[in-house]
Image 1 (cartoon, rainbow, N blue to C red):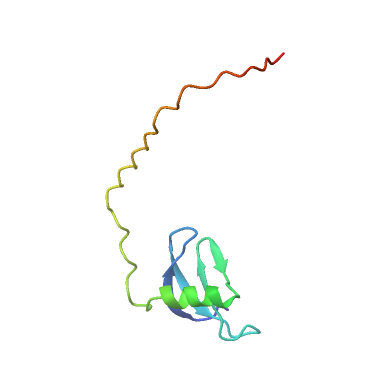
Image 2: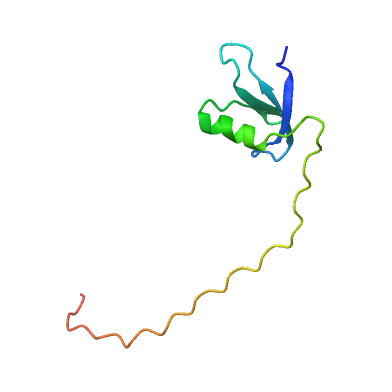
Length: 93
């Protein structure tokens, strides 16, 4: 039986909506999420903090993806023309 859901999060792997669950077994209290692409179980404190920061309540709908138009690519920098190349006195055979 799966652990009960405590929240929701957007999966950074498949961009789907995933359930956040809390372990009851040997890793008591650690959070993980389960979605269509599998279960992601961060063990480090950084991963746990990521889940806590991005988790939302179960009854809150997922945020709409931003439909902003793509930004124009940056213009390439123009470089000044190189000075005339010096001829070498060496001959390559």
